[in-house]
Amino acid sequence: MTPRRLLLLASVALLPLAAEAQTADTRAVRPATRQPLLIPGKTTLFQRVILRPGATLHAQPGAAQGRPVAGFSVAHVYARRDGWIEIGREADGRVDGWVREERAIDWRHAMVGAFTNPAGRERAMFLRDAASLRGLLTSPQIGPEAAALRAAAGQPGSPVLAMEPETFIDIQRNFYLLPILEAETVQRRDGTQMRMLEVISAPAELRQAPTQADPARLRDFRGAIVFVVDTTISMQPYIDRTREAIRRIVGRIGDTAVRDNFRFGMVAYRADISSRPQLEYVTSLVAAPDLSRPPSAILPALEGVRAATVSTEQFDEDAIAGLRVGLDQVDWPQFGGRYMVLITDAGALDATDPKSQTRLGIPEIRALAEARGVALFAIHLLTPEGRANHAQARAQYTELTRAGAAGSLYFPVEGGSPQAFERVVNGLTNALFRQVADTVGRPVGGVEPARTPEAERIAQQVEIVGTAMRLAYLGREGGTTAPDVVRSFVTDRDLADPTLAALDVRVLLTRNQLSDLSQALTRILDAGLAGRTDPRSFFGQLRAAFAATARDPQRLGNLARVGQALGEYLDGLPYQSQVMELTEQEWLAMGAAAQRELINGIEAKLRLYQEFAARPDLWVTLDGRPGGEAFFPVPLEALP
Image 1 (tube, one colour):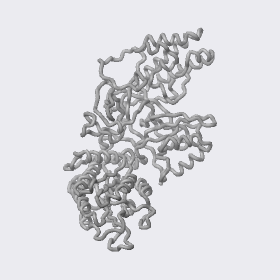
Image 2: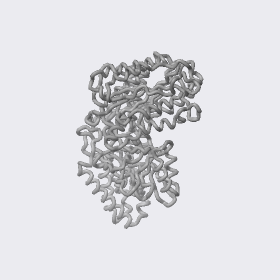
Image 3: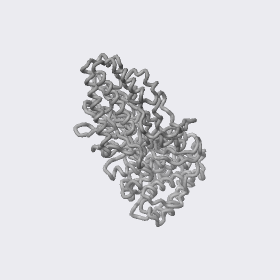
Image 4: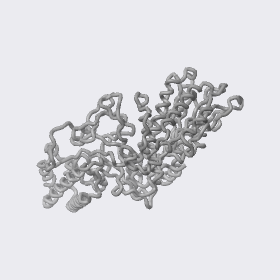
């Protein structure tokens, strides 16, 4: 098994940031409108969130019906109420609706990561938790320990969630988004400083329907659902309803254009037959999804599936053996959408059970599914007969079906009634089929949309899983494998040689923000040049210059450090800035040579900003609209 490589967030949904103007200028002044919420402790920076895949937009908090919004959109926050947040694309007072707070991630700073060229260094590793990375960064054996982690990446239990792409992606030629949520500087014993970054590492997300972005590449996307069905003595009503759900979708496909893109399969399983041969089999591949035959070819095989006529020795059955057959005996590489749905009223024999045919446990079979890129779902029938078994089975199948941002793809059927099961299996089958049909741009009519909270929840989770499948497919087609959507931790230095940078930390600045920053630095430069004969006048001239042009002169009246004049969007960034932290006492103590060096550095940065502004190819309009706010990912080292 190899570790998955990192594919990055596309830039299609990022919204404009709040631009801070420290000077009076000629920009149009809009009428007073409602403003987004400010970040606590800030006076000009608005709250922003990154929306998780699966977020839905509602007219009011708690409203039952909502419409999906693009995962990893960035929005301004206008209100927070009872676990909901009101969001808007712009900072101009226009709101779009409400989303659940749990479906959003606060993004205080517009920091992003940008990979350096990997030539001559190791690929960056994205780790599961902060403790693992902090321990690595402070270890005296950082190089060997990093090598061991890299060698074990991709194995079950490894803290390495993803790896940097093997090839170099130039952020200035092919913009991508690797949002940084938090940053911490770790000091090593040898004096080396390494930044520990909490990031959202995620597959590139296509805007709106994926076919609008690249229809040719997705037209051949194919999907398969393999039902892994418990066929013990109590299961006949559920077998019948599963067969009918398949029959309905096959009928919908008919002779439509999507008939070549979707197939079903089924695996039946029971339990050990050594002492009860009347059970006939432990596992049976009823039918594999077969693209060489029409979709309806599976139906005769399904007619022969019947529940056992004798009971098993114990309540748990060999579900893992059934899953293993589905993973091993289906030709998954020919499918982009890979889904297996377990249907059972009992728990699974664990690895220690002598009756287990595979001697695999839940973690192991889940790892096998991940290695094959197969998403596992579980429909668990909570029948009265299995009451004593429910808690154990629920824990097993919740763990089995964990799927990153989608959560656990575990669907319990309270009471285990065949009618309730029918609603769940139909909702799940319809949602999975719609994902494939929409992906290839060939939607099929007559498929029941989600109309109940239960169906909506299924559809939302399937949307996330379907997106991951689509992106993994695109990654495979393009030679890059997409990881799950995760929050992870990475360092900005090469672990084998911490003197080499692996990631540049950058700040997304708008043209207006860069213009404001340039004007502020110009005033600092002017004050510094004017104070060459009398350094004690430097801060006085700064206060006068900024107070005369700022929107809020009182805020700068007690200017204690230069950073107060440069904009709140630079406060709290993970870098040490001689200019930002400079106080009047430090300025006077520097001496003429150091003062001159600092002023020369400011002048050099101003020239750099002029170069940035003069090159339109460096700027990106992140919301994709003509005339939208343009951004540039400015490296920390280029900031004052």
